[in-house]
Length: 253
Image (tube, rainbow, N blue to C red):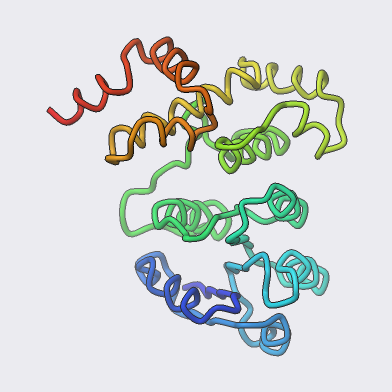
C-alpha cells in the first residue's frame, strides 16, 4: 500500500483532493495533508510519501523549491505540481524540478486519475483493481513513457498551453535550444512538424469539447487558441471533413 501527501495552503483544496479519487482502490491507505513547507519538513521522515501533490505557491513559498529540497535530502517520491496560475514559467519550473505533471486548478478528476494510475503501474510497480489503461498521447497514439524525455516535455507543454500562443521558437527559447534543431528532433521522433502536432492537438481538444459539452463553438475556438473563427472553421473542416456544428449534431442523434 502507498502513502499520499497533499501540500496546499488552502484547506478546501486539501479536503477536495482527498475526496476527489477513490484513493484506496488505487492502493493508497495513508493520506497526509500539509499547509506549509515547514509542516512538510517537520513530518517528512515519518510520512515518507510515495506520491506528493504540491501546490506551486504555498503561502509565500514556492512548491518547486520544496520539491528540490526534498529531493536534495533523498526523499524519493513521485511529485505532481498543482497550480491556479496558467503561467508557463511555473510549468517550466515544474519540469525542471522533475515533477511528473503540472495540473491546473480546479483539478480535473480524469487527468489526476490517469496520472496516478500511471505512477502506480510504472513507478511504484503496482497493479490496479480495474483494467490498466495505457497513458497515450491522443495525437501520436504513443505511450508517453515510450517517448524521449525531450519530446515528452514538449507534448506536455502543448497539453498545458494549447490555448495560448505557443510555438516551436518559444519552447526552444525556454529550453535554451536552437528552434531549427529542436524542430528536426521533433520531426525525427514523431514524423510530424511541431506546427502540425500543435494544430492536431487543438483539433482533438476542440472535438472533445464539441462532443461532450454544450459550450458555444466560438468559445471552444477561443479556448483552443483561435481568435479568428474563419480560421478555426477552415482548420476543423480540413481536419475532420465536417463542420463543428455537424459533428455536434451527429453525436447528439
